[in-house]
Every structure is written in structure tokens, then in C-alpha cells.
Image 1 (cartoon, rainbow, N blue to C red):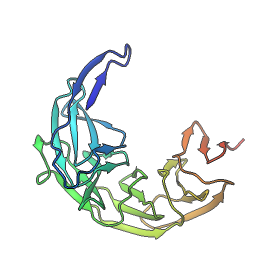
Image 2 (image 1 turned 90 degrees about the vertical axis):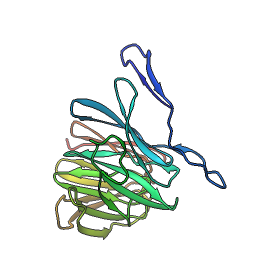
Image 3 (image 1 turned 90 degrees about the horizontal axis):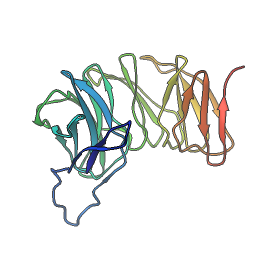
Length: 232
């Protein structure tokens, strides 16, 4: 179920029961951990939400379902991101094969066969969310393989192994991309169509949570400490 609440009062405005689930044998858990994304299409604010078996968009004002995309999964994690009329979603095929879909969010009803602009079949992340910088889509998958793709077409610019296992999502700031692995190592990359790694840094404990930035400060939570990093 998805709900909409008045952010000033907390009052329930709408609730919508998800549909489109299919029976499995043996049954799979109907779960997802992805944070919804709000995009505006033709003046209508849409809540784009990934779930088991499908992603769907709902009118943020009423909860009415606008469109949905079918896939074969049950445990979506990374957050959808948007770029110039496209939404990048996580999905699955054959349950265990993670995919990334580039979807046009201006459809109605089922859009599986009509509004998928392109799809990444190999190397898509399960936990870390994608990142858009300029006209490029950057991803790093759970096994430490980073990719730079053309956001419009999905064409690959480069693929490189940065090392370690990754759960944290990459972060863009101060003209650089920061990637943090579970072993506590951060890789600082230069955005662009050629792979450039400026630096590597290591903290004493592993990093699972995605970092956050505020002003010129970077906040990093390791397994044991919370760090604030800022040039004085």
C-alpha cells in the first residue's frame, strides 16, 4: 500500500493498494526498500515507486495510478533518479538478474512494451543508487564495478573496477564523484567520458551508509564513527 499525507498536519490524504502482483510457486516475499521519487509530467506531480514485480507512478495529489512497468523481481533497493524526461528504475528478469530501465514517464497504463527507452542488462547495481552528472549516468555496482553511460542512449563510455564491495550510493560534489566501499576506502573520480581517479582515501572502519553533504562539509558514517570532513 502507498499513502499520501499532508506534510503540515500529517493527515492522511489518500491511500492506494498496489496491484499487478503475480502468483509465484514457491511464493516470493513481496518487499522493496526503494525510496520513491517525485517527478512532474505535463503539470502532474507523479510519485514513482518501485516494488516487487513492478514499478508504478501515482498522482501525488490523489493517489491514482498513472502508469506501471512490469518486471520479474521482489526486492528493489536503489532509488529511481531522473534526467531530462527519463526516469531510471531498477528491475529484475528471472528474479535474480538485476536490470536498469530508462523509462519515459509520460505513458498511461502498462508501459512495459511502449515506454522503455533503453535497458542495461549487465552490471546494474542492486543496492547503490545511480547518479546523473551532466548528460552522463554513473553507476557503481555491489561488486565495485563503475560505469559511465550516456543518459539518453545508454551507450557505454567506460567501465572500470574501483575495488571493494559497495552498498553506499555515489555522491557528486565540488566537481567530483565520491564512491565509498564497505572496506572503508573512498575513490574520488572526475566526471567525464574518460575514466579518471584523482585519489583514494581510507577510514578506519567499513562504510555501508551513503554519505551526505551540507555546505562544503562531507558527512560519512562508518561502522563505528560519524565523520565530518571539511577544508578549513
